[in-house]
Structure formats: structure tokens, C-alpha cells
Image (cartoon, rainbow, N blue to C red; front, side, top):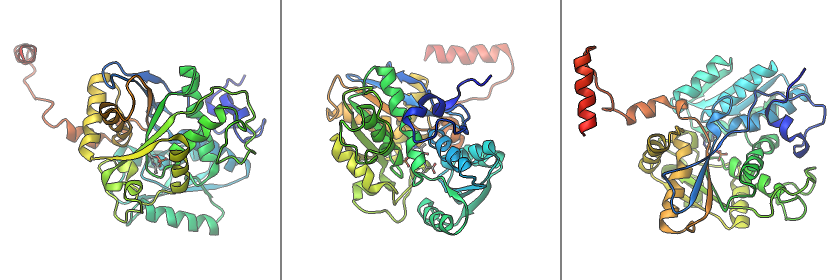
Length: 370
Ligand code: F0G
């Protein structure tokens, strides 16, 4: 007996995939939408915790679709450039499908957990002396010349898989939120969400700039309105704020250390159609919010993910996001992806004591008094 597993089984009729195509799946999707209890007043903020996907990031949503399609076409190998999460997901789904994954990553600039995943899943890992944008150009050239399927978000199946996060949010809330905030790197995910929200309103009833009416999702509407989409970049990697590619992007949030987003035009269409905006955050704002979310709400995301909430909290406080709004922030990846950042953060948070009852009591007493 086969039990339903993953988002293709759940949303097959809203995805450009055949009725009988076997899904390459690890049970991705169906992540929790967690209402925050302490942060975000006077709005109700929810976090969509994509860190709970099989490889710990939202990339699994796109990868199940991209690798399912590649397998259907008989591909033997997949390739991607990555700041870490895409390489982890590509490696895992390729392993699942019995394919080889090749990943190009910027040397020394991906978080340790992500590298560990690519290694364990058996990817061929090429650390390049360059950044993500350099890797992206190379991968596009390679995929043109060799029989290898590119599984970056320029592969249209990636965004098709990622759009399902919007469906889940609508199902959980009963309607679309007023505002949806995301961290932006390549800008694929913000675009995918807009496709999802648009199709959920009943494709064909609202102009969808991406599907050209042939996406096959002529389904009953799930909602009648679409959210305002807001994207946040790190200020050292903020091409949308500069209005031009950034040659040497830098940020502690290595996942979004991207200077030349592949979905540049699409993201600006999303911004215009949704009435949203882009803004930037300092590394310190990102890290502070990552820690507050973990310590005040119990949710541990990676630094890049915290950019969505950091921006939302600032925009709620300033009134740019209206009081009383329902706000969803996507937490794109799990905090355990980047253990080094967390460990640096909490320097001084632990103390070493003797293994005696007296020493423990003394330590507890001191914190209870404090
Ligand atoms: N958050 C995380 C944790 C990411 O890994 C990424 C992208 C983003 C946000 C930005 O999403 O590119 O769709 O705007 N990571 C890619 C990678 C680039 O290679 O893992 P985007």
C-alpha cells in the first residue's frame, strides 16, 4: 500500500506534472504556520517554518518537482550553484532518485551544516574561488553543453513546487494574509509565492504574469485576495535597494549573499502587482531578531530567514505595515544549518562548574536571584 507523501501527492492537480508521474519525494511541505505570541504586536504575525522540511529549508519544495521532472525525462545528473541550501536539497533528492548531483559553492562561504549535508548525500562538491553569482553563470553554461539538468530556480519546476507554500498558508488561515514577508536572495521564492497566491485566487480571474494561462491550474478559487509582498535583503547584498547588481555581496546571512538575482524582473513585477516593497537590514538587526525569535518564541531559524521577521517587526513598528494586519513571515531555513553563527552569538552564555550539588545550587541560586 502506498500512502500519500509530500507536496506532489497533495497538490498534483495544481502542479504541471502528469497524473501518473512517480514523485521523487522525501515528504516535504505541510510545514507549520506558527502564530507568534510575543513579537509583532499590534499585528498578528505568523511564521511559516520552512526549516522543518526534510533537508531543513524551503528548497525541498522546489527540488521535489525539479528532480521528479528530471527523472521522468531520464536525466542521470543534476547541477546547481548554491549558497548552501539548494546544494543540500539537490544532493538529497538526487540521492533519492539515484542520480549524481554536482554542486558549485563559494569557497568558505557556506554554513557548515549545509556542507555536511551535501557531503553525506554523496554530491560531487566543487568549491569555487568566486561567489554565488559566479557559480550561477558557470552552471548555466555547463547545463547548455552537457546532459545535466540545472536545478537552480531558473528551472521553472522549482518555482512550481515552491508556490505550494502559499496554498498551505491559505488553507491554514482560511484566506490569504494581508502581508507576506520573505528574505530575498535570487528572488525565486518571492516570485513562487506570488504565483501560488495568484493561482489560488482562481487562475484566469486575475492577471497572472507568469503562467500565461497555460499552467493547468484551473481549480476552484481558494481565496479572493492576494497579499502585499515584501522582500528584505541584507544591506551588504541589496541589489534591489541599489537598483543594480552588487559586485562583491557580503553578509553574515550567507544564504542570501547574492549580488545579481536571477529573478530580478519577476520580483519587480511581484512588487508592483502586490503593492509591496523591498527593504534592507543590517547584519546586526538580522542576528538580533534571529536570537529574539529563538529565545522569546522558541523558534530557531538560520540568519537569512530572520531577515523576513526583522524587516516585518521594523515595518510594523513604523506603521508601514498597518496595525491589525495579518502578517506571514517565511522562515526559509532551520537554525541548525548554521551552528557556528549561533555558537558565536551565545559566547559567554554557558559557564563551567564543578560536578557537585553545591556548585549547581550556587549557580541556580545566582540566576534565580538575578
Ligand atoms: N533564505 C534561505 C535560507 C536561502 O537559502 C535562500 C536562498 C533564500 C532565503 C533566498 O531565496 O533566492 O529564492 O530569494 N538560497 C539559495 C541557495 C540561493 O543556493 O541555497 P531566493
